Amino acid sequence: MTGALISPRVDYASDPAASRGRFQTEPVSPTRTPFQRDRDRIIHASAFRRLKMKTQVFVAHEGDHFRTRLTHSLEVAQIARSAARTLGLDEDLAEALALAHDLGHPPFGHAGEDELDECMAEFEGFDHNAQTLRVVTRLEQRYPTFDGLNLCWETLEGLVKHNGPLIKDGKTFNDLPLAFRDFEFLDQLELDTYAGPEAQIAALSDDIAYNNHDIDDGLSAGLFTIEDIKDVPLVGRVFHQVQKDYPLLDRPRIISEAVRRLIGIWINDLTAETSRRAKRLQPKSVEDVRHLNEPLVAFSDELHEEQKELRRFLMERMYRHYKVNRKRSQAKRILKELFALFLEEPDTLPPPWNEAAQQATRDARARIVCDYIAGMTDNFAIEEHRRLFNLDAMM
View 1 (cartoon, rainbow, N blue to C red):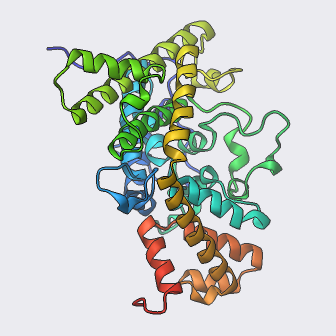
View 2 (view 1 turned 90 degrees about the vertical axis):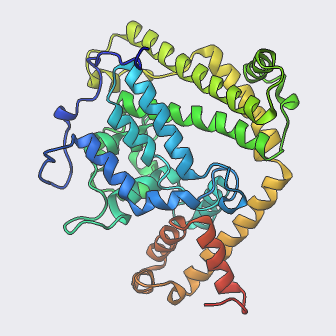
View 3 (view 1 turned 90 degrees about the horizontal axis):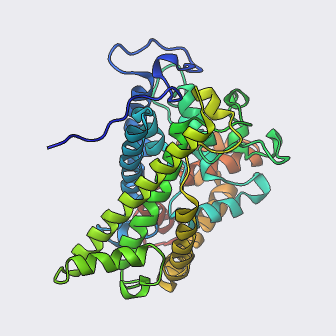
């Protein structure tokens, strides 16, 4: 019996002992590294708990077996930790970033984000990545001397820049979403560079997780069949091979085995391509990784092209399926009506939101309303709408 592959720590891994620290001074933990402490703070955050009832693709109450934002985040964290271990990077930082990456998502998934962005159009919009920063630096209020979670510099940098530099191609600080610009230390996160390698790992682990669990959920929901995906590059080949290897296997186990193999293929490709890039680019430190002219962490060109074909299939057959569209339409109407009511009648907000909203300017009130709605779970948004718009609803 052999153990899991653990690569020696590479020189360009983020080092918790060399962390740039926190913006609010605190005593160090005697039992945990800064990155472990950040992971634990994220897990204990109320925003993290609320992910259990927030839409991934299906509205959270539609079935117990479909992914929610919470189960998705846990799957991303598992993949990120495995990839980081294989590459000799810091597993705890990769895990913390993976667990936190969706904290800013509103109810009803991307439909909810689109609607909130539309509602906030005259108030500088809504962006779930920027809202994540707002959650961990302002909206979580658990500690006696500061708002937010006071995460360390490397974690905040990773949350802000996991998809690449924010200031590039002519984009300036003032072009960023307001929820980013409101963070007083944002300019200290070196917005014109890439994030460290663990953040890059977390970002692509997100791709691996949702690509594959959306196949699983779409098949389980009956939105498409195994036969429908036979011509999708890579995915069709893997399903065909599983059926060939196990001709008498029942359909649920065929799906589970194929998805398991697909996740392995994606992780192996990610670690192999990243190792090739590290050999070619020769970073000697995490600062070298940040200042490269391209991401260190990536999929191979071949897998990238196959992934695009899968996304096209899922967009057509799942994300735009009429059943999903109906739920999306309902969700957008719920959020639109809640936003309009709270903005015009802030005294209908619960405390302490109502006191703050009634004393604020219209622009500031809109952001307060947006924060309140973005923090809702699917079920709470549905019930809040029912309470406010149905006269026979119990208060």
